[in-house]
Length: 387
Image (cartoon, rainbow, N blue to C red; front, top):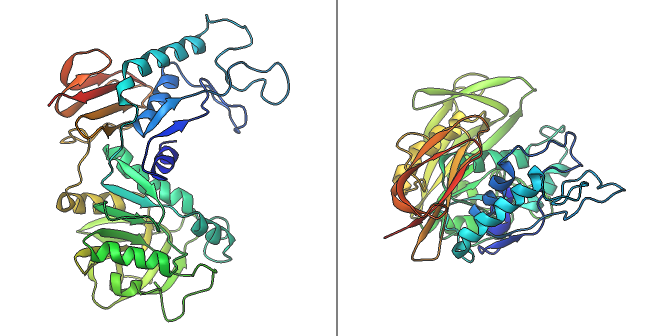
């Protein structure tokens, strides 16, 4: 849900309204699991942390018949306010009232992941690569998730959007790249931005016609300093490895073979017929930097690469991450231009965690000031800067 909250907020880079959410469960999934105690309020706060100015429900009362008679609702078939779900909604309302001043504030993100509907449709329709599924949406999720895990605000924007305010932009599998998209990316990098793109970049135009003359097309070879020669689609379960600064990472699904002209090689394939050709490169273009990842990894390569470039870009978590955030714990922030509001959320259903803030802040739920917080399973805290 966090990916989609960020996407909807990023459409206008303004607060949005959560129109429908369930206080308990839906009835249309393969397995319609109900929300555990505390998770209903936490999922509501998740939306607010990502930029929503409302929490609204579908449905108010469960219908007696038809397809939604077992879909979650504020009022169950017992018609009572004395059940767990109704009390959970009451708790959510009380929390929202205590943080009402946050409504209207903005989310400022140092990074953005590019997501393009037309690109997704083109990949879905493409007869090639892995016809069982290209995993474009899943790949966008993966890049977004590494920022979620680090407590770093992230926008989800179109490759046609104004990118000038971002320190880092990631373009996963941007297969469909026309002149408008390509020129926007070139201007972003030449103006001082850092662009991280992956395999399949610049393969077809807006009419789904292949760019002739080599990939990536539309002048992006000059930006990245490479030419993508071939791409190998791996069988399910088939893996290879790529090395980055002496650390090996598992590679899955796709391995692109590169020829490079001006790019500096950051990592190479360790095995397969691609070895030792480049797997990760970087290239200075204008005032900015273009990073190219030629393979899909299981997660650790992108994690190490991000850790490598974040300090130079001045990208930081909204909380203190001297020690990494525990698994399932994240943080987000909103601002009115004067005060910063920090949300700390524990999605672990089993672990109590302690998170350190970057400074002493006021806890809007308790009124106390603190430099850290301890959260029970499905717990959260909301803080306001006091400087």
